[in-house]
Image 1 (tube, one colour):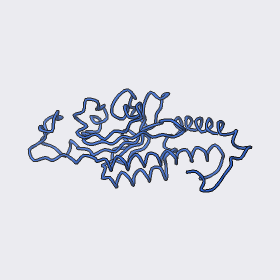
Image 2 (cartoon, helix red, strand yellow):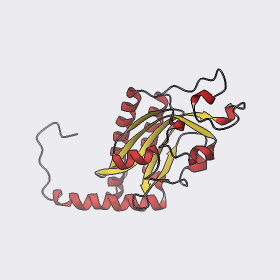
Image 3 (tube, helix red, strand yellow):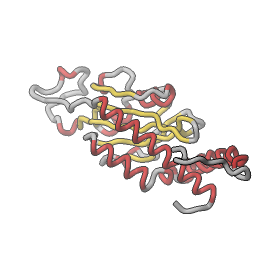
Image 4 (cartoon, helix red, strand yellow):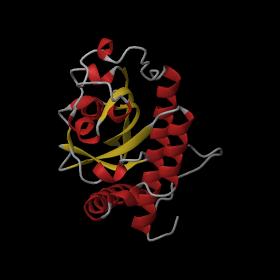
Length: 215
């Protein structure tokens, strides 16, 4: 936000802007190797969790780009299976809805995701779930897309004992079963606002690390 009064950049500090940006990038890269969660621990994670609950998402994740931008690594998730994939599972950026959102910079609001040919199903298979509805928005900081924030509504296969195989259409669900509701545009807007705030919080944290100050 610009200053609410006439202001002039400090002539001694303004030439350092490029150096500060470069050092933030260095700290971010080092953090991704040493402890990726440190970038979103605390306020960024609490904010994301609050918004996910407000839009009735079953859970959500914050993904950051790793391997020179070739993969997305989940560094935070607020669901019961977080320990099974956070910090270990990698999604190629050429795959899945989240990969498309990261590479294109275009947010997505999808329903019946488990039937979408663009979905990368490996994680669903690993966790024994079907992703039914999904929001995915780019996470931008340092002047570029650095990751994705997702929200999902899930169908847990353990809750459908009469289901003989993974369904290929909604007509293959047991009689009388109603899948979760889809997300709406208001939910997508809330997630985009959240991603913008989380990006700014990460930038603030990196700046504090560079300058050696506490938040």
